[in-house]
Length: 483
Image 1 (cartoon, rainbow, N blue to C red):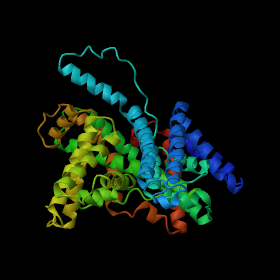
Image 2: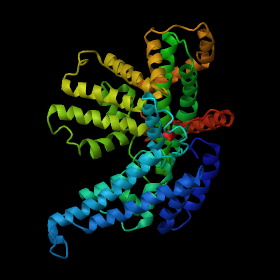
Image 3: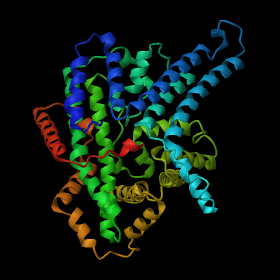
Image 4: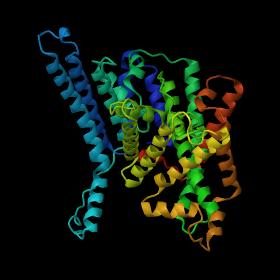
């Protein structure tokens, strides 16, 4: 079930609201947890036990970690500090191994088998795994909720949060349907108070509805048409330079409005139930460097990788070479987090390499002398080049596409048929609106902060128009569901 569907908008969500608001406060978290499990298991009920297992293990591990305090004087017996630390570490390792084990098996099992087959074939042993038929289905959102649940046990281990003894509260935190399958990746400290006590005001609920409407419009009105353009162009051969860039920019717009739109809907839904989720996007295509881009793009993931991986590796506290190594390693793993394919690893490596270059340049990056619009343009150029690798199914396709971008590939005689399919007046209008919003419009969350009659009319109009298109639209993919 996705937010941008008739079933969710006019079936699931109204039912949740009708049940949730009349019941006593002490049952609200249980209500949200049950509905969240229904939401998650709607497409495949077999996914539910995986999330439940992760939740139970992390709940127990956090309590056991807290049972062995950092200071031995707080412990009833005269147990040495080294033994207490060892016991705490064991429970943390159990939590990490469980979550990473689940993520590794379900997300990377098929990738590993395919890689082994490729290597064996290269050495003439392609028949060794020829009869291997086991394929693993990827549970929706497993990359998001495992990271979210892991952050809880790590923060308990570090002493940053107190573990909750209320299992329903913790299960609600992990499974909360507004941000379950696509983020933002929320940390327990962000929701701890709201899980215990929260209020929903008319103004807050209205803001949530407005942000939900804006996010839905981003997804349906902008991301989906751009996705159609990108699909046609990326699946075509013999592109000329202009069409290759048209498709690449269309994909850059698609993935932004697809994911930022879904994040807006998630944050808006959270507001409707009294939760405040962190901002996930901050106009990333206005960045003036790749370093700034990663402070603005998928901010909950970027901060997670920084706080739980980059810092743990030593961050920038070590020598310059080790700092560059840490940047590369974090981005390589970040690329692999996005998808089980070597193209994602290379995509992450490209960003890691450029982050290292910018770090090495210090306060005077190599394009600092350029005017601001050129710095923004150059950053968008580099990001778009990266998206080609991200979007391509394999390396050979990516190399052919890069060749087309720079006029190094032969042009097909049927190129004008592609122009007729994806360069129509409506396509120009959509791409123009996308560019206008990307580089001039205020952030969605900021825009809905102030209430006014005209904003209410605009949001209502966007919702109605989006639903009208949705009723007639057969094309409604969601990119981050595969992650």
